[in-house]
Image (cartoon, rainbow, N blue to C red):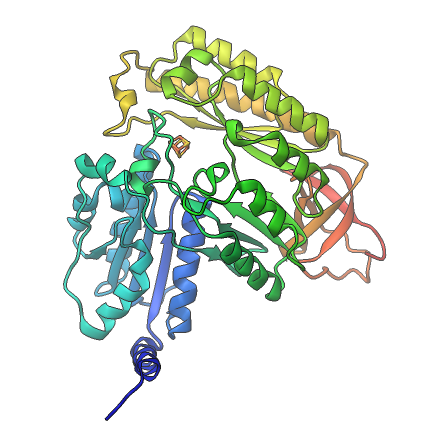
Length: 466
Ligand code: SF4
């Protein structure tokens, strides 16, 4: 009897749906926004096949863990999380993917209870492999790469796996790019995620349109090195943001993080004039010492970084600028750190995110002789946090008494809040319209009145009639 290919595919999906229907899953994600977007996409596809999220206290049939390996602490947290899930859900099919799974597949496969370890190449087939398990009870599988092979592996550009986190928050995270070609000396991400690659502008616009159709108002554009967008399609980051700006229904975009050398004047000018790109930038500095930047193999110096910061301020005086720094990198002497701190204080940054340098196996930084003690790293980290606090307070204070648009996020216990266009966190518990809490996912004008009790956000008042 003749059965068309389409019919065969349909029967196959129906079969998977009936087998997966009602299976309970737990999703556990560590690390960056990219991981969250990827897990969310896996969950959405499994939900289409009938898999439901296990509620608190329920036994799961599937545990999906998306790992991070940015520091030793991250590795430790991943192991702890996996052990805990295996203990709490005996008999569940435990799947582990992400950067740690790519870099240390054997370590993870050795954890009792782990059934499947997916490296970067297999990550895009996670749903298919999970389906196979439940339909065929597939054998224990593990990634094939060892750490020593990682650099060779990273030479591959690989396929781009599209992801968009949906529904979990008011904001959506759209992955536009993956991997990195930079090989900074302290970083394992190019080994874990492979070479830079991206989706086509057309496919990403289609995803943004889907978000708009679901009522989403704000999209955060995420990736590993998004300014490098276009390596696999020949397109440019500037063309991407110009095209996304046209998507009807999306009112706000934020660029999650962009390397200073890739933050071109054209990109800045476009954002300054754009309808939807918010005055908000996240730019990694990593060190304010030129000598340490050189040891890190970063592709800019402090002069270029300062020029970018000044240009943002010139074009968008209200912009929030968040900046990542690493303290305690090998080679960061007391003198270099003091120099770095002075530099950080001298640039118009709104907030510093500080990370302590962590030794990662296989990285070139391990060849740098000067090591910073853990106590000294802690001390440096505290100094940067103090500096950051002063910068953030000064930035927030400038806007007390002004009105800014806020995208309201789900409120609880009588308090609702969100972020202004320029990324100031605002909360309010006074509601003018009959005293009822307004709906979330709407953009309303708010008067910023002062600091909240916790000192981590400004309080606001909804403007009547909004
Ligand atoms: S730019 Fe450097 S720090 Fe960032 S992912 Fe690439 S190698 Fe790592």
